[in-house]
Image (cartoon, rainbow, N blue to C red; front, side):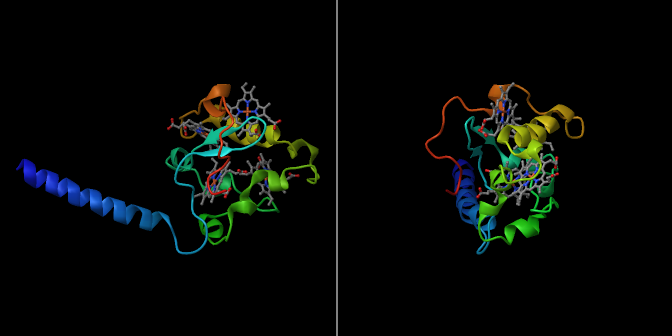
Length: 144
Ligand code: HEC
Ligand code: HEC
Ligand code: HEC
Ligand code: HEC
């Protein structure tokens, strides 16, 4: 019985290692970062897509285009690079709205705003250290 179980687990393990990455990596375009990323800047912060997508949050609640229209998952995965998703590409001194030029303004509005408000009654953490890292990581963001 033991032997059979471990055989079964081994097969499952093999199955998982083969199948899981195949569903995550598409042949073309970009996909949701599968592990925690670091939002780089003067005060780097952690962000995990998984935790947030499990809440039922849509891509477009955070990602939008140059006209501030929400981006769909299909729209994002059809992109060739994640470069155009970078928030500071648009949110800098060239943006006409002076209240949305600095990282702190946009990220605190988006991230802290929702953490305070919550999603379906579930709030997000509010302490500085729940998002901000103590040390700047060697590797700024996944995929760079
Ligand atoms: C929900 C997540 C979250 C929490 C909580 C949070 N921040 Fe941030 N904050 C961010 C993100 C994301 C950035 C963008 C990263 C960057 O620009 O370095 C940022 C940027 C900043 C910046 C701007 C850095 C720069 O480029 O000028 C400062 C300063 C800052 N945070 C201070 C704080 C302090 C102090 C607290 C606690 C009172 C706090 N933050 C709590 C997510 C958070
Ligand atoms: C709760 C907010 C939030 C949601 C929801 C969200 N993202 Fe993101 N995503 C971010 C942030 C913040 C970054 C980092 C952007 C930066 O570095 O400026 C990011 C980065 C990315 C990147 C990497 C871009 C790069 O730098 O190469 C991809 C790809 C991505 N998201 C895809 C998606 C897709 C697809 C969805 C929906 C299935 C989604 N995201 C939902 C906040 C979110
Ligand atoms: C392609 C350009 C572009 C990118 C990339 C971009 N934004 Fe924006 N964003 C805009 C424009 C344009 C507006 C509207 C400005 C105005 O109201 O004057 C806006 C508005 C906002 C606002 C204020 C309105 C609102 O939706 O609450 C926040 C907060 C914001 N963006 C956060 C982000 C974050 C966080 C990211 C990265 C995940 C991001 N933006 C990526 C162009 C962009
Ligand atoms: C639409 C609402 C919403 C937005 C936008 C949002 N969060 Fe959250 N976040 C939450 C909620 C709710 C939780 C608690 C999830 C749980 O307990 O399962 C959470 C949890 C977290 C956590 C702790 C769990 C983990 O994933 O490690 C961190 C760190 C975090 N968020 C960072 C951020 C940052 C940084 C941003 C902006 C780029 C952001 N969040 C944007 C709702 C949001």
